[in-house]
Length: 191
Image (cartoon, rainbow, N blue to C red; front, side, top):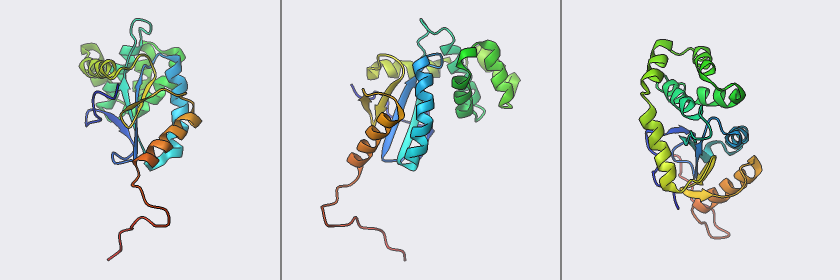
């Protein structure tokens, strides 16, 4: 199955929207495999640079990870204050301490408006967004976390950085315009 929901303005995105390759991750903040992938992705992002657009979507497996959904809501609440990616990173970096007290401490560390943050968490303001991400994962055929899609197609390989970089580079090359051997791609001329 392909990615059921195209990347849009509701997504959290790193990198240029017009990059030759887009990597979408469905992740769970309490999943140890997602935490491992997070650290690999740091290297992938640094290596790929502007050739890649990275999108993170929530897939909290609440049956086995009871803190995954509250963590996803906390990341969204931080995102409402412009701090989604710092919160995303801090949750994974402190996953072994994941619980309500940690989420509050991380909000404070990021300098969030804590009244607003706490109100958003208490009211479950971002639960619909988290659920919408989860349902798009299900409709896309994501069976577990982390699940990756490269340019809309499921990626079934290993999520270590070398494997991901190889797959992303292949997808980027496949996306590039074909230039016959011996010819050079036309470059715009400066006027």
